[in-house]
Image 1 (cartoon, rainbow, N blue to C red):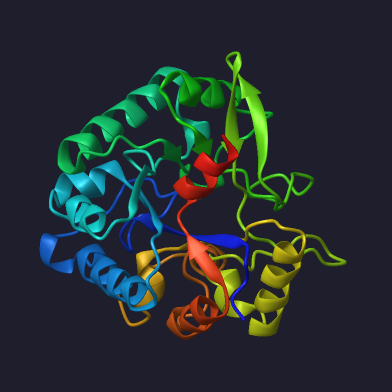
Image 2 (cartoon, rainbow, N blue to C red):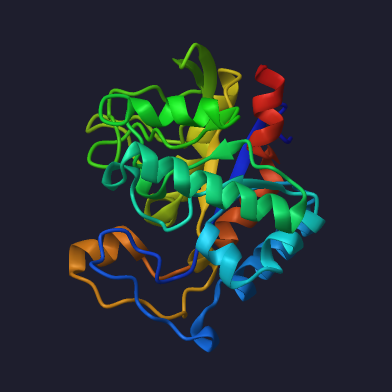
Length: 276
C-alpha cells in the first residue's frame, strides 16, 4: 500500500562535470554535455508513475540550454534554484550569493514564467553557523523554503534536524527540508540520494522511508542526472573525491522505480505551501 504521507523527489539539474572543489570548471564542448538527455529520461520516468517533482536548476545550465527549464516546467514540475555557478556558498560573499540567486531567478522566470521560491546550495554548503546571512538573503528575495542543511558530518551538521523545520531569518521564517538520512550507531547515513542511495542496502532505504512516514514526516530524496547515466563520462579525480562525486557506477533507476511504486511522492513546493 502506498504511504499516505507525501514524500518528495528532487533533482539537481547539473551536468556530469559540475563537481565542487575543482580549480577550474572543465571546458566541455556541447556534444559531450549530457544533462538534456538525462533529464529527458528522468521526466519520462516521473511521467510513468504520475509524479510531479522539484527540479533545482543550475543557472549556468539554463543559460547554455534555454529550452531545458521550459521542458521541465511543461511537465507540471516545480522549477527551483540551485544557484548559478555551482560554487559552494561558503566561497561566496553575501553580495556574490545574492547576485547568483537573483541572476538564476531572473533567468528561470524569463524562460518558464515561474519564479523559483525554493533553493538548494551546491554541495549542501549552507550552514546556520557559517552562513546565517544566506538565509536572510533568501527571505529577502522571496524564497519560502531551502533544502541545503544536510544532517551529516563533513557536508553538513551531524547534530542537525532530520525532519523539516522552520528557521527565523530577517524577521521572517523560512522552511527547511533536510534530505533523508538513516540514523545508525555510527551516525546518520546518506541514504536519500547520491552515492549513499546506490551503495547502502535497499532494505535500509525502504525501512528509513517507512520510519519517517510512520512519524508523519516526509522523506526527501535527491537525484543528479548523472546517476541515471552510469556509462557516461567522468572527470578524473582522486579515489576519495571520485567516490564522493560519483560513488558506485551502477545507476539509480531500479531503486527509484521500486520506491515510486511503494510510496507517495510530490515536489517540495507542495509540502512547503502546506506548511505555510
